[in-house]
Amino acid sequence: MKKKIYAVINGREGTSLYESWEEAKAAVTGVSGVLYQGFATQSEALEYLARQGAALPLNAKEGPLPKTLEKAPPEKVATTPQRRTAPPEHAQLIAYVDGSFREGCPYYGYGVVILWEGSILQAFGGRGQKAEYLGMRNVAGEILGAISAMRYARSVKAQSLTLYFDYQGIESWATGRWKRNNALTKGYHEFVQEYRQYFDLFFVKVKGHSGDPLNEMADELAKKSLQAE
Image (cartoon, one colour):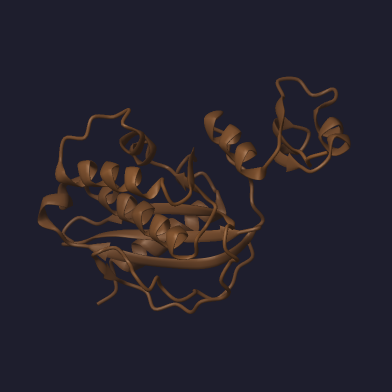
């Protein structure tokens, strides 16, 4: 019998994944407003959470900043971290992305935190300075962060990537629900359509500046990228 993964939203322990029905049952019994469903794979469970707009809490371990991507987006990379470890092929990855902008600064920055099985694999930032994108301020940076995360996922031959973001356009421009009316959003949409052939891609929106440690880490990396020379 194929092993099941149970996704639970608003359960006794909040939003969680369980590997047995006994654990899932304990999390949902007697709890009002709970949603849950069983899946054959973790990817399907994560997709369900994404469709419901639920974020899976992670107990991330802090570590040294790892090495930047060998093939970063076509923008200047702002950090010089070290690689911790590489995931195996067909890993199910999670990435938190955020963007930053400061008045009077000719750049827009991004931060990316890549996770595998609850541990941080990569944490890096970068920046762009294309004049036609500056008007989009921090959103331009967050788009670059999403692109960078997808490039990383392809480079390690990931099975899936779940993007956690705080600006709705990261998902809505990618899926086509929002109109693309400039070169950056059109290019981003086309990029996503191409990269979806390499791995399963899911989206989860989180509330910015709400105390989520991984979202805050991505935000801090994006801010630091604007300071690098």
